[in-house]
Image (cartoon, rainbow, N blue to C red; front, side, top):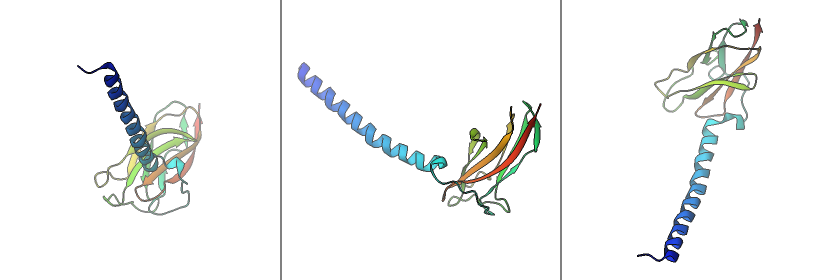
Length: 148
């Protein structure tokens, strides 16, 4: 039978190893996620780029609380590729600064075009954000008015 002192020592070593592993692995995983999935921490590009600027198709005016479609495609003047080496990671839709929805895309199998069905209580700026796998995110916006 193991003495209580030795048992305590083994438990302490195991917990210390677990804590150190969590700290090291946790930081590495978190850094990878922040780098890959949070373009808000990078400078978002707002200039016009034919292959990367999102194109927002939505009505200019909608009724408060009624569902309507917002289609976001990538490439304001053409189509963005969907290749394993060059693709769109996700497309996110915002109203002003509040994120409404986000769709993650698969390279090769997902065409970079998404239709969101949403309802709004107030107007503002619809913002589409997309992040390709090789650069910071790109953004476009469209003013929308909500009527009673």
